[in-house]
Length: 389
Image 1 (cartoon, one colour):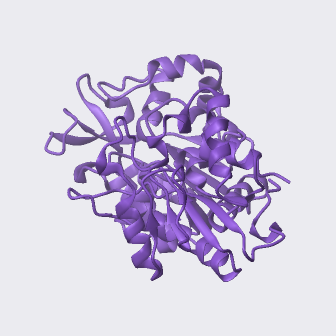
Image 2 (tube, one colour; image 1 turned 180 degrees about the vertical axis):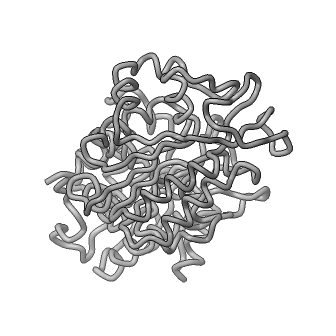
């Protein structure tokens, strides 16, 4: 992708920047920020703009999935955390500039999704809101890669009215993922896991690119079911698989795709359930596969250690439950010990590598699982397309 970046901005001095960030961070019981990684991720772009002499930075983010503009999802706490991290005052305002914007160097708007026009299905309504937001600044910066697959007002409407550019974090993520797809150092090994059958699209798109695709999670057992094996009570997305029947067959028949040969199965979906290790052709009725087994871990590791580029999207098993976390742990550790370029998809995969303490050993831990996966699927991300030169 040939994006307009911060280096393409012709003038900074005295200009106002509207920066769409992703401060959708987890909060604790009393509303304090529990994990500030996403806030820290935007700081290089904020500092870059300040160093270049902008007169003001206006920040906007969504937080959670508000239904009734719940007070617990206001952006006050994220503004406080940002202020603490950068050592500068951040003024929080309770709207989106309708009542004016203070002269503060950095201003945080209210949760952008409190305004129904942000996610409206009506493009005209979105654009009206985007036009108002654009009127607050001279140029726009997208520093929310994780939301770049969404056609929301703050993502795709604002840059219709003022020049738009990719932030430093977005530029880094796009270049890393695009490079791994378009010109990877070989061998390329992809690890794809999850529940929903839409992961089949990603696997299918990687078939001509990857040397090996290692499949885990429920999608692996969905594919085994498609090959005629009994997967017991394992979670399945029968409707999604049926909709993609041609892709499922091509993926199942490919020599590049590796499926589990053994599994950790349980008689219930809970941490204290009875569990055992069985070969995948010996899963009994009433039992569900919740992790890959030791033979699969060993086989998958053999491919990972030879890789020069690794893509990992989705935990291998139900890693939140200790008895079913071993596959994710061992695969993660093997990747961490590798010299390969390693790109980890956002969401649960990012949580997994963080919980394992190996985040710093990965080349890139993407902030956006959905956005990065759609890039791999070959889809255009609307909030990036509008920033192309």
